[in-house]
Amino acid sequence: MKIALGSDHAGFTHKEMLRAWLTAEGHEVRDFGTHSADSMDYPDVAHPLSAAVESGEVALGLLLCGSANGVCITANKHAGVRAAIAWLPELAALARQHNDANVLCVPARYVSEDQTREIVSTFLKTNFEGGRHQLRVAKIKC
Image (tube, rainbow, N blue to C red):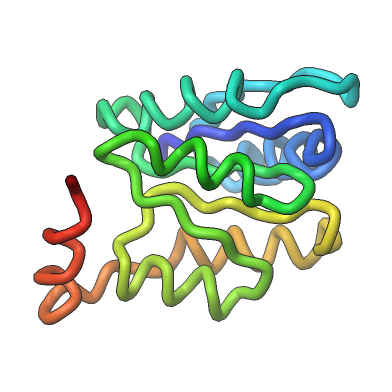
């Protein structure tokens, strides 16, 4: 699967772990940065990543920042993106099943690297249920 990956400085170490792990799992990972733990502005990563998801260049996106709020707000400015925050695997599953989320936002300051792997794994393995949820998802765009 083609996956977009990005973070700000707070999510950098988690992003690097995910990049190595996802590549080892056979995924094609496009790394949108950041490329160090130096302070940076999360929209500089979230916007290009979201554009890649929106255009279909990648199947799904993964964003990490301290709280996940900033990257999630930014990603959701893109009409074709449905970004969701998850700090538990169950939330990642529901975001995919019920909301057809195509960008997962993880709060790196509040979950361990092991928890992050579990959350991301759940997100990637879970499918959208469609049905009654499709009607709701169709009403999201402005």
